[in-house]
Image (tube, rainbow, N blue to C red; front, side, top):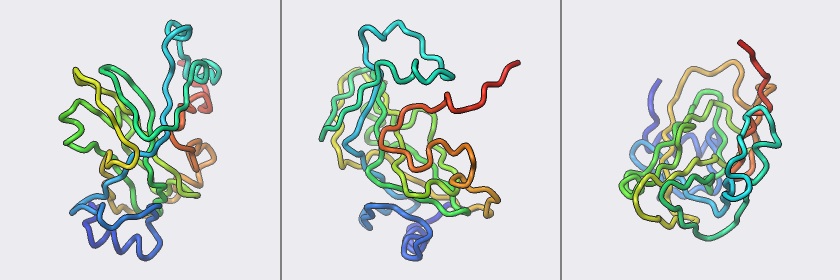
Length: 193
């Protein structure tokens, strides 16, 4: 296993194995690719839904109070959590995994761009899809995020070729996902103790 460096990223893209659409060569870093923020956001609205419990196994509880916004910028208030998405649509081959990591310049303003889900399996996604970002402002002041700005870095690691890539799994619920896709945990089988 090894992290791809700049020329290896370019080679994988040129050979059509790694897909980043739209691709901008200027966004290649020594060991990563800067992904940009799309103009699509969603979050659970405060108000009548604030005290309603979200049950991950019940789709209605997840979808109630969900707001979708398309805008060129969005101000994230301290403590606010929103879903965003990469501008880039991504497709990984069977032998490359992705790891999303925040930009240090935004982290220094209190912006976390992937609260927990920064790992992208080999074989994600056919067709290419945007990566949903879990954005939260842990700082003390509001921060404006702009569509098109570099929001995170995608690190690519070469691995052994997997037998069943993400896009071939029968339960690949985020394959081809739209921007700022909400939780689809309710599609998981219910396990009891």
